[in-house]
Length: 364
Image (tube, rainbow, N blue to C red; front, side, top):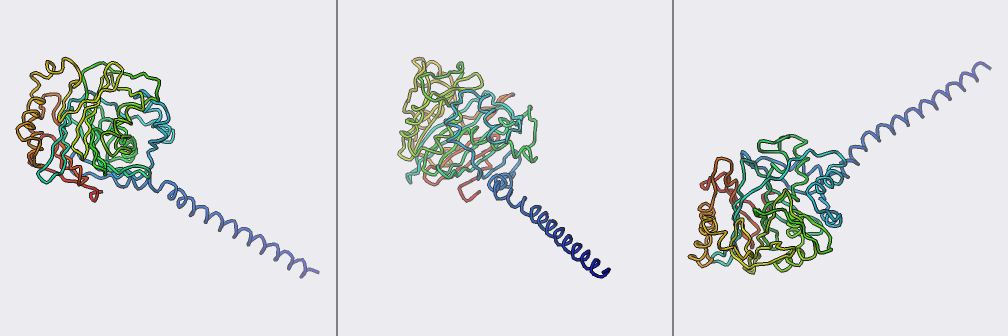
């Protein structure tokens, strides 16, 4: 009798032990699988963060593998910088306030040319107060790959108002908004575009179309357009809104050799064919008067006319050096010469034209 009771207790104990073992195994499996599942879900996000590296002092690069949700943003009907920041907090930062920096006024210049070999050149000076630069390579699933540059101060990662460091984990997360703050770039189809500030009051186009802010429009051009004409069609399909209290225009060029400036004047998109521009309305009737005395514009136009638009990459960089700015509060932060056919760029920083960096798709 006692033996039977003992055997029953042993069986129950073994059964409980097996159940406990199964539970322990399940817990172990869950603990192991959770990071694996999270890793699979956020693989591209993690890969993007890990790709951030410092090339030199003040120069970083990032391979944007994650989905920055351009189509969703374009459908969001966003017409202000604050709305873009709020959208970014929700869609790119998972509801966590980003505490990003803000854009500031910047002066710039851009021009287009061609080499003797027939390679089309797109050149750009970015003039701003002391800052650092982020080079981004984007390759969206439903769009064209592109190489572009953005000012890290726009994300609170450089300059006097920096709230984070680009070397910190949170700073790298803040870079997720970089595609929408690109200042200049080219795509794999040979289209180049840059944004330049105009000393005019902020304009908000109103023709009853979907809203988009100018920096998002620039990103859409790089991702979706192969030619200047396609870029113009895209811009015509939106009401374009300016930011930070200023107007802007876009310099756009492609491998056909066409170069234009897209401007918004009296609520209309105005396209002007031109090989160079700085920070003045090209379409303005007072354009000649406004540019008189602007050594940057006058210098670039004369150099381009003298060479008949034909130049080497070195000459193009030299032209940028002659149009650079250097003041107590601002200077030329970077000078970029893009090769539209080769999908590559040569770039100098802080007016150091004896130190040229070269990048292409393989650099990422």
